[in-house]
Length: 168
Image 1: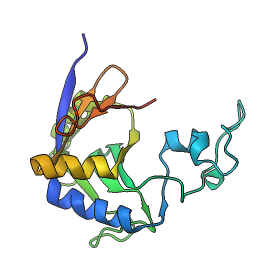
Image 2: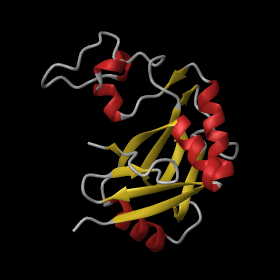
Image 3: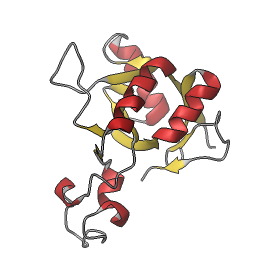
């Protein structure tokens, strides 16, 4: 049986991440984008058995948007380069946690259980297009993402109910 979980990220805070990404001319790739020929300098997929390198990616081709990350909580960050740094800790990127899955403020057992329930135990990241995220925030005030357990799909159902991005 397929189940999904909806996570909410505060719209005002996410908008600051989106504004940063939109202003940047270069963008950090997700793992999937490193493999995608459309974003690689040579226009080809990495050869079988060859570990891809971020230096092989044309960062000008990566679209602006958010990287949604599930590791120490679930959060969004700008993919713009140079990175948007956290004012309180300039050794890390500015991030916006999903409500109830915040490793900085929620009790460990609570955020860990919520992260596992929503995304499973593995660390992962995926791209969310900036225009899509802005439309979702404009329609609801927050960024709501629906995450499915059958291969992980992201759906911003406040924009278009069938919009989904499969994560490998």
